[in-house]
Length: 269
Image (cartoon, rainbow, N blue to C red):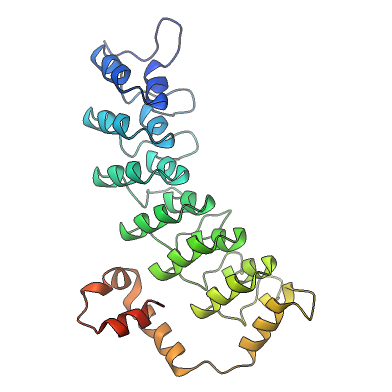
C-alpha cells in the first residue's frame, strides 16, 4: 500500500528531501512512501529537493519516477524552484530528464523565476535549453522587464546576448522605461547598445527621458544624446543581423563559418 503520512501525520519523504537525507529518502521509498504525493499546497518531494539544492535526492527521486513537471498550488514546477534558488546542477539534471523550460499554460516561467532573483547563470542555461525569452507574465512582463526594473545588469546582459527583445512591451512600457526609473547610466547604455527604442512611449504617452525629472541628470543627458544622434551604420547592421538570426541562430553562432572578429561584433563582444 502506498504511504504518504507517517504515524505523526507528517510528510517524512518531503522532510528528508528538503534536508538532503539521501539514506532516509531511499529507506522511505523502500517502505512504500510515494514520491509523487503532495502536501496540502501540492508540493511534492521533488519540489523540496530542487528548492533546497539537494542534488542527490533529486537524482534518487527521478530514478524512482518522480513527476518532473509536477506543479504546486502556485503552478511552480521543480524547475521553477531550482531556477529561483540558483541551483545549477539541479536545473541541468531536471532539463536532462525532460523538465519543460516553457511549461504549458503557466503564465510565469522558470526564466521569470530566475530573473526575479538575478540568477544569471540559470538564465543562461535556460536560454540555451530553448526557454522563450520573450514570454510575458501578466504581472511582470518579460524576464527583461524584471531585470531592468530591478537593476540586475548581469542578468540583463545574458538575456540581451541570448536574443531577448529589448523593445518588448508590458502595458506599453519597455525595459528602457523600467531602467529610466532607476537612473542608472550604465544600465541605460547597455539597453541602448542592444537597440532600445529611445522614442518609445508608455501607456501615459511618456518616453523614457520623461521619467527623469532633473535636466542635469547624466542618465537624461545620455538619452537626449541618443535622441539627437543618427545611429552608425555598424550599429544598425548589427541589430538587423541579430534580428534575422533570432534566439536559435544566436545560440548556435559558433557553428557558423564566420571570422571570429565578425562573430564578436554580432555578439557585442
